[in-house]
Length: 189
Image 1 (cartoon, rainbow, N blue to C red):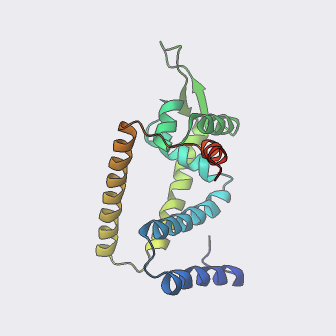
Image 2 (cartoon, rainbow, N blue to C red):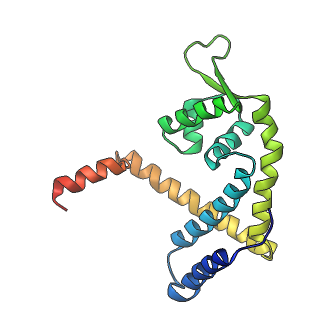
């Protein structure tokens, strides 16, 4: 992947930077984090696409490279996605030859997901692409700033996870988009 950009990309990049530096220099952290994450994701998507791998499959493969042979439910939880989404992705990944689904010996109840030879091979091909994206994103950033950013983001993640756990512990649920739409329609808003 080269660092060359076309005029449209340069204009888009400049518009984003102008937005942050001039229009909303003190905007919320959530927006900065979202835009940074979007940029990282898009950079990786471009590289993965060169190998015919979707970003969604990348997310599941990363989990399986660390913990091969887990259940679909565990994979869903670790990916932070609903089981039907995971099920569809796993079926497609099976068609592509990245994974197989089978019952572990002595367990006929749950299907576990295992990497195939091809799924394992992809780790050596795809992980360097993610490392390249990280190097590119951090180019010119002092190591001390990177360490501070990591510490701050990990603290934010922990605090938000604690907040979510407390809300869920009080019986709150995150409503689906469909449920929110029904609520709005029902209250006349």
